[in-house]
Image (cartoon, rainbow, N blue to C red; front, side, top):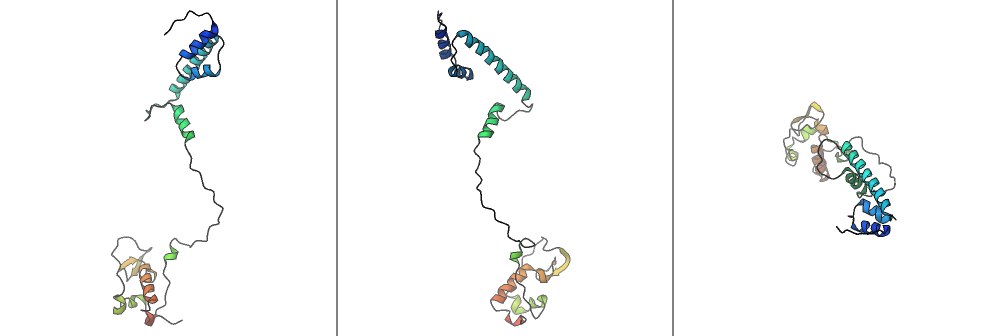
Length: 185
């Protein structure tokens, strides 16, 4: 600290501005140059009072639980407002396409009319050797606990609604291997 015997008010105000640490108060002195040292004292007292009020307010507002960070509340609010937001790409309106009544309807194989029942068809040795038996499963395969599927050898859906069998029979029909068992249209 340097002692000066100055009587010039402007010189004292200039020396005070240069010697004070860079804080909000010093920034306010840089923005609005005080003409007299008395003005600096008045602004310093007002600044101290404002800081005490803000500090008192923070201690009343701060929650009792400890935060993960020791940053003041004002910084967290500021960070939340200055985060980069991902821009939303605007697309022209397109009406929804009519959907199937149930999800997965496009995965249903076409139904073929056979001259024999499905349980008899899968029992024919020539057809049975071309069908891949589904693996045993504990999951529920359909809504009906009393319906029996001969292909899965399990309850929960009838053989006429069996999707696994329907897909395999559709492939055999496309390959022409079940031509003799199809009803003519």
